[in-house]
Image (spheres, rainbow, N blue to C red):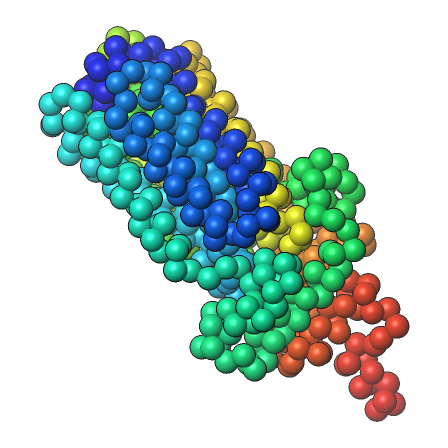
Length: 497
């Protein structure tokens, strides 16, 4: 936005990178520090409320900025709250949601992000006609509104029942499970079975203290889970979505849409497509599972980047714009420029419809309860860490690497598909407690060789509706907690013989 650039003295590409990356540095610290300090000790609900308060303070500083230093400080504080908020909100959602709709509910966070991006771009498109600092202050000031709304809603929400059981408050946990899943019926067999599953896993986990960050990274029983949780976030970020999100105006200018109005319009259309695609994934994620989107999404995204790079190198003529401090391309063939734009749109559609929500869902599913808050904090921090460096260097990379950058990201996306096929197990349609069975010593880390780990569905033979005793016993047997007892189905067969 020219008004923003003019007010802050037309910062260089490197300085723009710092102003963007300041938010991500704050999000990195907020995810690790606040998630570590508050989520396990005081509960998921209190942590979300604290994160919202920090976010609002940072956003107020940001909106009232008069210098680059104040702007950067506001971004860091804003990020501290946002990082903790995203990490804890996805964790909280996963812990209060039944297995068969957990993917849809946790991916609502991603759809909300897409909706916020859409609103932000169109507000920016309208605000560009405001003269002076009001143009960009309106854009930042309006971001206070959703923060306030989240705080009000969360104030009336219940605590995570899994956190309550962990802190010896099972009666409250039963009431919340009953209200969430059975219209208040405390005797519902599904509710009782779920509570018993939680109790069983907590009995196992209480034999050891909650893992430290060091243990999560290096201890044998946690390191594979941590590698999956951190890498799913890292791989998504290096697949390229934030080239579009943070520097969309620069990217679309490179593909031939010059002028502030033209690039903002392209941003608005792109964000609308992302919202529709993200919503489709929210609806379909429990049908797809987690594994297929992790494989197919990056494959399609890589193809799109290849086409965009080919259009830039084959038909584009680069030149440096002194106002935006960015390399832009003029196309001698208008159809080639349109094709580049179209495949940028298709990239965003592929990302939204197949890949966007999974990394926000997956880490909540692979960690055990006693390490879930810290594990998801580590995973989410990898999102902000990678975003920080991308945000810092992408403006310069778009200038120096230019069209080559699109082929680099294409190669990264193809690599992500291969890694996902080899290493990532399916977590869809399975309760959080039975997911521990995917990480028993007899399971191979090379998931493509384990057919059970590659498909959706329960890992237990008995359904929750069969009653808490049956399901609880089978889970105990599977986890090695009841080696002297027999599975009810086996016992019934032996008696018949």
